[in-house]
Image 1 (tube, rainbow, N blue to C red):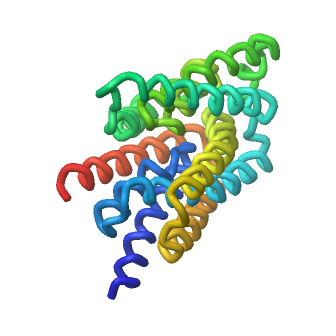
Image 2 (tube, rainbow, N blue to C red):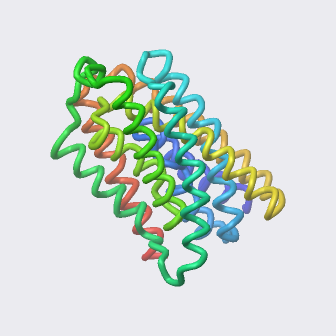
Length: 258
């Protein structure tokens, strides 16, 4: 009976996380963690470690799919990733010195708001207008935005994927597919770093739950990424918006009703 419950919970957690990753570069931790904690009774630290581990392959495969379709900015993505990793540690350290500053529901509300945003005001930036920005300006923007995203994520402990998608589309002016592709590329490395640190500090998690979450997240991320790269801009905006709104609503329900 227990393995059946684990299978069902991991399937739906992986489906939500995979769709969020493939469509919007969303971190699996935002979906998987609350479901594992609520329905399987896993300790929060262990649940986050499993979620981050699930994110690694899902993000890597999604990034590969976006890259194969020329929807990935590796050059600026590497620069932003370095800044995100560095300033996540800075934000985390400063947060430890300031009491009562965490915002546990930050990523949930951001997920809902971004979902509404993509439906009401879709990102219609073209690759031509995106490429019109000078390489020097784009590099400077990547450094500054990477610092901002990393610090915020480290300080409040949430929202990495959503912050990246918001910054890439609204501030850096990326078209949606390239923004998601670059976001999942960065998330693959940040998730790997985070999951390894969790396992080293907290020990190995429940292996069955870990394997199930990794498989289901990877499967649905692959499906979502393939669909996203073939869809038109307006269809992708609507699909991304609907997925984010549904995920945000489900996570809120899990947090407050169970």
